[in-house]
Image (cartoon, rainbow, N blue to C red; front, side, top):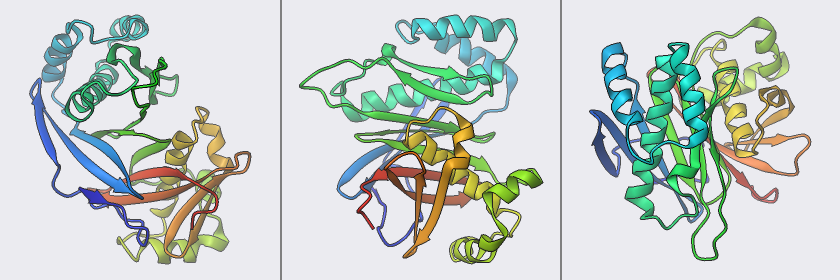
Length: 272
């Protein structure tokens, strides 16, 4: 089990607690403990081979009761546009959620798998949508997903949570200024370099990823709201807030293979 320390913002994704092979795809799961609460993180690598994707997507798509009826409509549109890459990411997200539910929750959660669907927005972002059912016995779980060119992540938690991953790269000059104001440049660079070797040009995308993860934790669907997220480094911790919400997130991250991965957890405003 990976324990997130209240004294460090770093996640160490070492040996997974479970490894499953489905449809020739390796799924890795981690148990993550924070403040007495356990989260389940699923990770799988993207597979670039087009023929492999085509064959496996067809197999996954033909699974009985595997897809939500709203997804089936969207998938028809994607197939017409020949957007196999998006469909493959969609499929991997579903597999991670499905196998994680079977492995860790034994149907003890409020969601039924065919009432969970992965939705793709106009800007190609993936998000999980759930038709919530009410039960006094079953426990509600929250889902978040993210993907990069190399990996897909899903997380299941008993409270609001968000995740994001980004390939570390240059972003536009105008966006850089918004993510990293000149008067914060030195302090942010010093802080992040306590853990990973980064240059000043890397910091804006790192901050972007932390803020996007926060948006997911706070249930914002409009990426434009990212400019209303404030980031505060205090006592070695990374906090984020939204100017219109009386909520705060604590953030944990790791950097490997030139990518950043972030978990944002909603905490009480009094928690420090």
